[in-house]
Image (cartoon, rainbow, N blue to C red; front, side, top):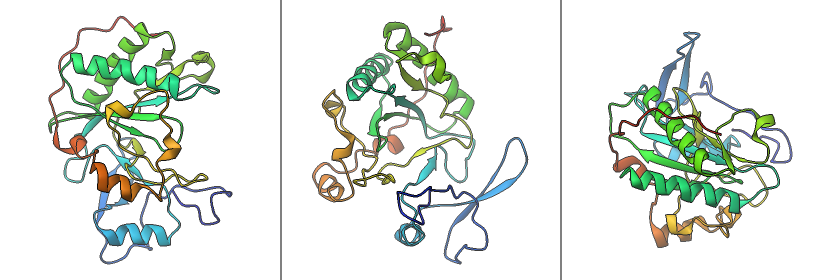
Length: 247
């Protein structure tokens, strides 16, 4: 996502790499499942890529859940916790703790990270062999289960139907769907960074803006790469019973 005129002016999304491609870049062709159009995407696999992105006013990097070589097999299931307008981290933390408890009851690991703005992402790492449809179906079943026990949570996509509830977005699972990459800055004042967390840090006092471009190097030196388990601790998804629906 480019901000060529700074964060006070509109940004634009850049997906297809065309004539601006450099010879050293690694590009991956990602065919659309609907239109058949092929988009050439840049793989951020070396420091030179990050330098090129910075030189082109790219602040926020959005990433797929699958990698080159197996685009149809996601590396994780993602839950995107989006608080209602006027609500803050207390609403997010309550929903995140309920989600974490349910995932633990299913013996599934999970990795939380700030979105860099108001919300939180929770990722369940997967072994190879799952499809995007597997991930989406599982996420929706779990999301509905959380919504059944927490009146403050909904999986309803329509903003008009949320009625002050946190939106537990399960629809970011799917071929070509993206989330903000870990350690990516956001294009807002203070340069907050999407930051992986320990579950012990997820509470009503969590301030996503406290993790920013200036202090992330010190945090990484102190706690290491808390996102690594999302790439290395993959599991098989359990088969869940039919959901009774959600709020």
